[in-house]
Length: 174
Image 1 (tube, helix red, strand yellow):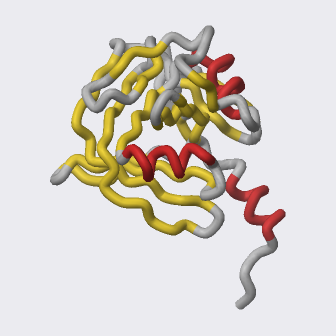
Image 2 (cartoon, rainbow, N blue to C red; image 1 turned 180 degrees about the vertical axis):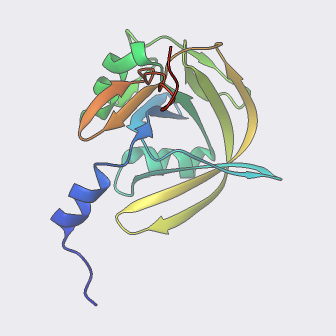
């Protein structure tokens, strides 16, 4: 049995629907942010969270150096932020980002405001994952902004939830 070609793998993977989040970190005066879709709550004891990032990203080096990061789960109205931090080179700036309100979490890591939920983590491990680094964080603080619709990514496009129609039971007359 041979492994599938990269193109075939990408075509199949694009049909996996996932939430969208922004990973943030700080190193010295620099703040880093990157849109991610590989967030995974990993463990309840201890509280662990994982996120995959291109191993060449300066964000990975910042997390390694500072040993902390945060992740903000984006809502359906935050597509512009997702697009902004998905663009190459857009996720690094001196000081705080303009137009992207942030506050400091328990570890001192910046967290995007108005996210559906956020996780503030101390670095637990960095694991190899092919062309990505798997950042595993021990969650030290978390919060949410209340109910809301999540921002989703499916088939190369941002999407939001839509209620499914209520099925009519078969064989039931009105």
